[in-house]
Length: 164
Image (cartoon, rainbow, N blue to C red; front, side):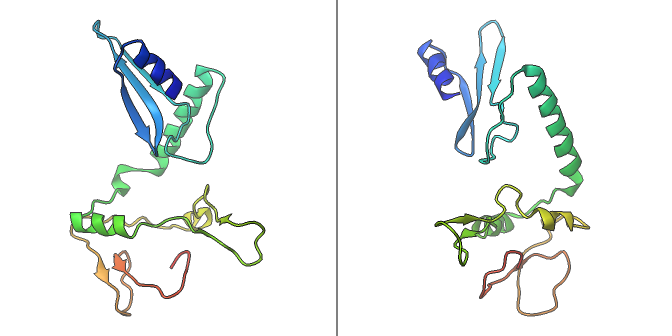
């Protein structure tokens, strides 16, 4: 994609570009005769750093893209989407959850990844309800009181725990 971008620039065009996760994922061109061309990466989840998807034909890509859209639409529904206040977004950004990476006892090598491509698949299968938060739900500091279901807490942990 980057080589193609340079060829387009060298030919005198000024395309629009889109990056996801630090990678060029889309090049757009609009010509004076109102023709629009959009060149996208074959990778169905461009922000995913876990490999690339290369296919041999447009039909295969279109079928894969259609299946990916069907899966995403089944999993990620608008009615499951939370809406947060500015303060809560700031807290979520500051205390973002990341996949644990580090040394394990008796590990071979220097670094071990823990489930980075599946991101807690077994926990995902145990979800029985989806809490939806809005601007009226805000984070509370946890002070050892009984936990209220579907509430947002800020907790300081003294020991590591993958699922707290």
